Image (cartoon, rainbow, N blue to C red; front, side, top):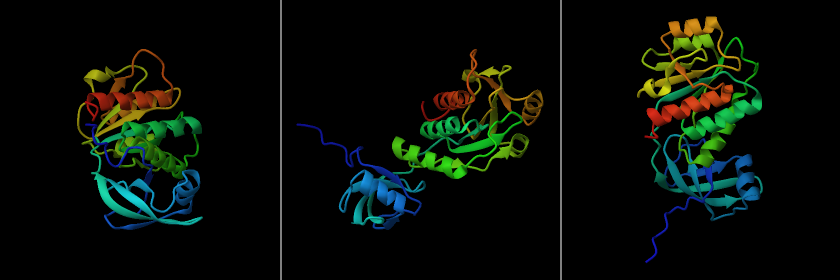
Length: 245
């Protein structure tokens, strides 16, 4: 006898909505979302999809009304509880736009809880568009099955980030001059990983980051691009102390 397929099927489109979700709720989509479902995916009244609000988990919904520029969903039932994720922050020096976009997308897929753009002495990006990065994180969460979207905060100067960090949150920073191997460094609990820009931290920056209680870690013998280093460190954390175990 063939196995009963899982329901709802994973092939259903997923959509993040800002409105709080509950069984029986009606959700009015914005014009961009309505266009995506109606004109790109060619979905009409009665079609099913999965929705999440970043707080309450994932829900099965059905298109109740579909127009040219508007669409209303009817929320039917919960399909998944909110995901439980490690309390891991990734603090990174923004690089060029394409590389920063890629970093945010992949960090979302890897399970980061918060993304913190940090401005260092060698940071080359003068402007960080949070609305763009938030849209990228939402799209990545929709695609990878997350029920939470990482919080992306305003850019902060490196010194202020290090000095204001709660002492209960362990801070690791990727030090290109050397540090402890990752395998013997990471431990469970609230954590922040700090990765510098192309060219690395200055001697002054390394000094006050260490003075703030950060642990220097090594990312191996090869020179990594800034965005590669950030994602390598986050991946290693998830494997050693996060939810990949």
